[in-house]
Length: 399
Length: 200
Image (tube, rainbow over all chains, first blue to last red; front, side):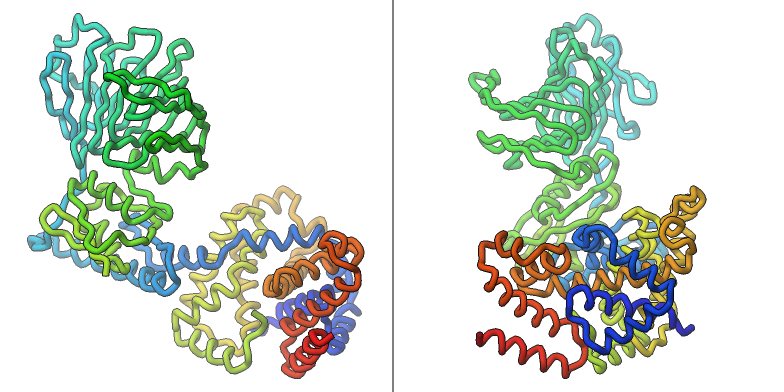
């Protein structure tokens, strides 16, 4: 194939550029003049040159970033249909190349492992988290919830699993309870559970979190308390505002969807709005009662409120990294390593130890949450990060 | 980034044929943006354009590559992009709705195809040359030549005298000329030009 016509078009395009910027050479001018002898070409020329503001057109070029395109291309080439994950890294180009090679290596390693499933693996590994939670009842009893279920429903004082099965331990125990005694749903490290409250609000609890809630919302407000992380889908009830209390903050809601991350061992609380609107208030504890400091912000879809000590700030975010856990995957977008490993620590129930400082690298990518810890680590291993797993401790060595 | 020297181009083409991924990456990054803009002319959807170009490069990666010139590579990629774009459901739907751009501007698909290549190569050339200029020079070129503002206007905007603007414009042109030209003789001339103006 000779591509003659295309080549002429390419050359002429460049010559026209030179003509516009007044840097055309006589030789080029001659070529252009000859090309313009043809009436179709003249038509092309006038159409092109009278196009709208050139700046606008030039801006279009900025929309398509070649590095981003290349990263995606490398993944397409190396993708295995059975394993759903994409990974790329935001770092120096040299390291980028190493990582994209490692994607292919990882895939073939997995294949080999799957083939020899029968043989016991001598490689120490840790399974992903699952549906683990405990429920503390009003009478003080703590029961473990069924791990084959993914959530419970509170309705007219009775508690059932999502599929309708009753919680046998609690039958009858909820009757006659007033709404003031709070119940506690807690997840350990490696646990996640979902609960539907008596007003229809759905809450997904992430690992190492506790939700305190009443069996019935009897007052003028619907109040729950949270430590840790949860995703809320609040049932609409204009007459009764829904409030979430966390350490140092309070969230006032009408009916909406948002994610709250308020772990006591995190330096910041983050409230991410998916849909609707909330008011985020700063509070302080005095003798066990939360006082409003008077500072508040309102958040709408795509905004995140950050509470750090006594400061309250708002940022625009892509909500996916903050809500992916609820849909069953990790989603990192230029996420610092420290953040990633903190999330891994909670989900896999491991400790993280840094020897020699915390590396600065950030990562982007997503991976299903039901992958074992090795699965997550194998990816980091091929970067410049040195991570090893010993018993239940992740050791990060920064050389 | 003007044209590669003949030696560089030849070695890149050889490496490309050998399946060297570094060479492939260089070609990818060189042509990616233009091809996306080109695809976008057919489907008018940014994400779809990226999908299309990704597909084109996947096919290209698998194909045997015997090219004698980098522009031949580019030409074949334009053609492949056109085919892939036309097969994309968005292009099909649009042309079925008879609001397809080429109907309005060019009347036939083939002319549209060549015209778009011409147009995009033109913009690419301008873009590269301008973005490689030092900031002030780039601004002067953009505003006087591309936006059609008068020397007077631009001088006032930048807070300089008309004569200063004229001088700076000549310098900017000289730099631009040296960037756009392939012929080394012209480069020499431009170099002399630049020195001449610097000494003024």
